[in-house]
Image 1 (cartoon, rainbow, N blue to C red):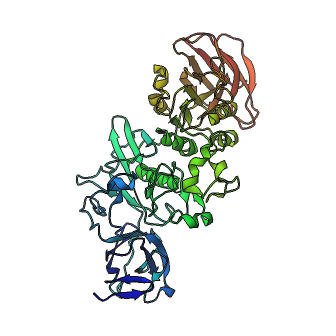
Image 2: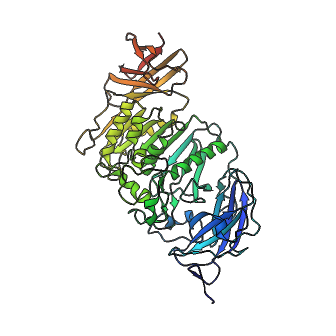
Image 3: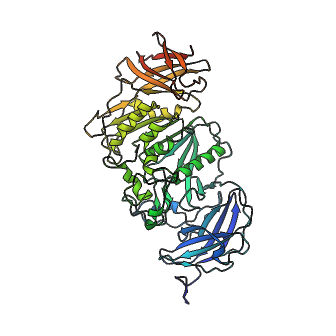
Length: 562
């Protein structure tokens, strides 16, 4: 066989032939036939508004595309587990309900959106393992002759089953539950595939999958925290696979090349994907916008704190089981979890994200709670003091920050490990797994603080504080009257063994109708006690201190203007 040396790439046949383009729904799907290449070869895609005969007149829109990129790596166990044997290659389903592509072919998806109206031309080249690019172009082989006219539109997920997809409004008026999985996980049998735009990954066209199921519980949305980086993630001691986890935040913009990461930027790609998924599900399934919630365990709990808690405009409540609440270098250093994907070693305090803020500040839950002015989602959380995966030392400062900021929360901890924390929790605490989903964005709630039945979480040291304890356990409410001229609520306290009376402070959050001006003077009537004068704070929030709950029947609070 005649061997040709082209730009450093030795091949027996052209690396790319049969380049083809199909436009639909704001994207262009490029496919090509691909010859076998040296291990470590990658592919590049160029675009222009005229036929590409030289790369000098074209723009490179993608690089480091893996060989045989039409292979659906989501269906290969070796993508996610280092020691798993590779599965039989199968191609992506790129048309809803259609057949799979040839897994030996190449595939790239370019997003044009609603903006582009001009004909586009594309070319595909390859780069050898040492970085030399074969720039040879052959019209009709690796360079389009006719070009393609984009179809304006928004990205649409590709249905991955052969049965019909749910119709428009199939979850109309139902609650939505965003459920985030733990590290090492991947959502199997996902119904939808998306090829993201340039904001959703280190290169555009990266595929991601997610699941949407409609049941009696409502609309359950399960995204997958995996991103293809086209190399073994060897620096992650518990990974080593090319489909990495990101702790539901994101990763370095140059993660495809370990040597280049020092010049990259930690970017919230995963959060952007989640927001895109939620926008699409909202538009397609039409859930009740006031009944959204977010939950997860382990890494999913971390994402619940860093993503769910940061979006009070979306979520009414969150439930986080054994989460990292702040990424710091205290004690065992939870910030080290970010190092493999976001940086090349210890993260300095001034390493900034694509959002323009220091990464460690962005993912510091205690700082966020302390500084935010918003009414945050009501948060239920469970931690274990002996958790070797999620360091305990960050939790007490986080609990105290929630208490001091007078945000709605309830916390429980025990002396358990990562796998056992909460297993033996009382039934009323286990019931939090369902209770968090009853809250609504269009209903107010009381944030409890300084509750007398709280236990001591300590200072974060292993031997300080109660081994088993809680804050705001058993605190509840009912019968809210949120009117323009008054506000009334019954406050409750109840769990097995509780000792009455219980004293607590409340701050009213998400008030709908009884709006108050900063420092406005008010009158509070609490149970049978004499009325007392109170005033709204500088942000217009109403706080009442030292409320007495004498029994399980609770106490009625009414607030009026004098």
